[in-house]
Length: 344
Image 1: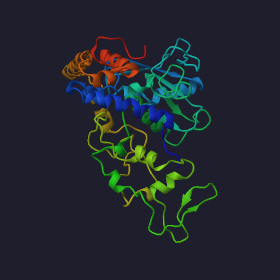
Image 2: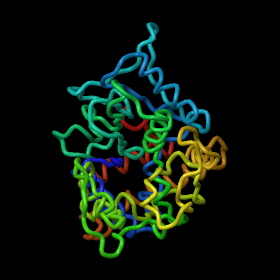
Image 3: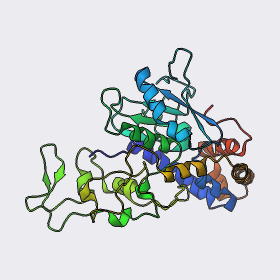
Image 4: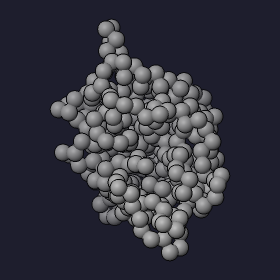
């Protein structure tokens, strides 16, 4: 089983940026907004989507699969369909963002940057294929041009929810997954692999744990990457409601990943459709209600005012410089209603 993950160098750039935001947030309570809200797009806005490859029929299917998402919140996914029925495209030599969400089908695996990271030029190496720059893909649906996975609509919705700032349900701090996962091998497990090098139960039926299994092909993940992708996230940047076993954001793992069967961490949804909890989360991030929009704008304005005063100490001056600060100001202006849409 190959699990979803962004390239290591992209994850490293996200970690560096997040460290700066956390440092800034610690300097002023108003700046907690930097880690709690900046991943979301401006409610009520149109987030543009463009395709690198694939044909019109595939583009139409992907767009159709996302309709459940846009119907559940105050945000439009704009696929830029022209009079001839062609969908918006982006190119690997673009110097301006053709779209906030740039979809590719020609890399391996499924992944997406989270929310506004999709247009953040500090995310990903400049020459890499994945990142927030105009010529980089922000979302990938590998192999869809030749063969789609079973319940492919759920895969599309899962990745587009990432693109709208959702995280994985198995990392929800209110869930049981961390305690339910079999991190370590069964006692006395003798490492055993099949013809493809994948770790399997040994001759005595003892099973590999998650760390061992994911260390082998096709994932080849070190322990730290397993922790990053599977351990519970206790992060103010993550909007976490109650754990939702019906969510399209909850992975279906092999049975041996769990300590018990049936597991409280195993998905109960159909793997295709948004759950009621997914819809509630979308309505929370992208509300229609005027009072919620007003509260978001007020907090963004307070953070902007605090950012204007970050020259008050040498430590803060050092933390506030460069591209991270410029990007934070751009996002805050958009969320406060004082700026243009992000990435335009």
